[in-house]
Image 1 (cartoon, one colour):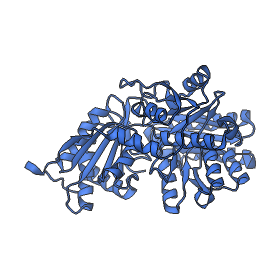
Image 2 (cartoon, one colour):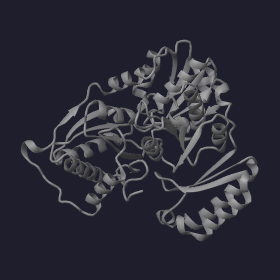
Image 3 (cartoon, rainbow, N blue to C red):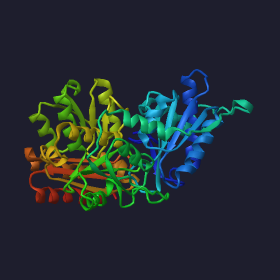
Image 4 (cartoon, rainbow, N blue to C red):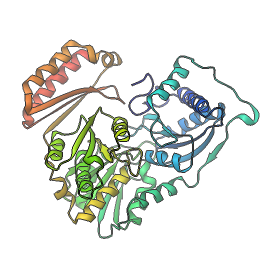
Length: 450
């Protein structure tokens, strides 16, 4: 991780940690880096945002920064993150910016930047931006007159993105009744139309954003609302998106959660059967459940494991030509159709498997056994976050648990890439035991790093 950029862009509490001043600086530095790579040509940058109250404020600041260095800006309004990644290619723009803090509460916000290819900005360019902002590495130009950037408002962004989603399948989902939880976020502008036009009967909840209710007791981080909705409305299944709609978790007709691991397993197996699973490989992170790896062994699917973060999954897929990858949290990438995780596209792909096989989601998902998993998040200080890798007592506590679990489980303790958290994760067949062991490590983290 860099000094400003984490695993998913720059993120913090809006108007304090992620201030208008910093956002404007990011806009300026981004325009400068683009101009250098474009050999002086005026950069074109599009900007999308989620439904947070602070998103318009930060949009204005980033726009001002970009224009002040001579970049032209197209404002897309409220769109999902994957819409920015798609539209930057469709509209032939030089970069795309998404203003969102994804699944975090409304007081947070973030800035992520996409290249003209639709892929997230590489580390080298993020480092250049950081150096301009933090080290004054380059003198900032101040064009005047007609050389300053111009701003346009897009009228077609959502409609163009919806057409793209509908184009990824030739199936009709008529006969399916599905529930959609839009997290009062970006999918509120698209999900109902997408699945209705694909033929499904749709029940929508949490699609009335007011600026502060994004992710609040809803969406993929609070899936109990969707579970109740599916059962109460006798739906075949349901999909929960997060605030910027780049992730999706599903619920089967009995109300049981189907997480990212199971969604990837179901889709990868079907793709392999159709001869569409490139190199018979799926890419996941070290956080994927042990049951996923067992499932892959049983079905002749190879696994690639990366660090936590969808950017690392995507890098591996892109470099090696793999077709599916993702995270347990619901970031799923279908590289044939998208350059980033896309919750609505993932839902379409999962529905297509159901339609093609004639099976329900529960039967398909139950083919993967899930090992009990415990995840304990410990909020730490900035000092504690820096100390974590070298604190001997914490590392000794982890080693003791590794030795005790042996081949019957595993422990993974890591820093969050987006929040001041240490995440303690254990898996094993004995839930009581891994709970006890996990809490013992979490307590050491609290004593040493809070």
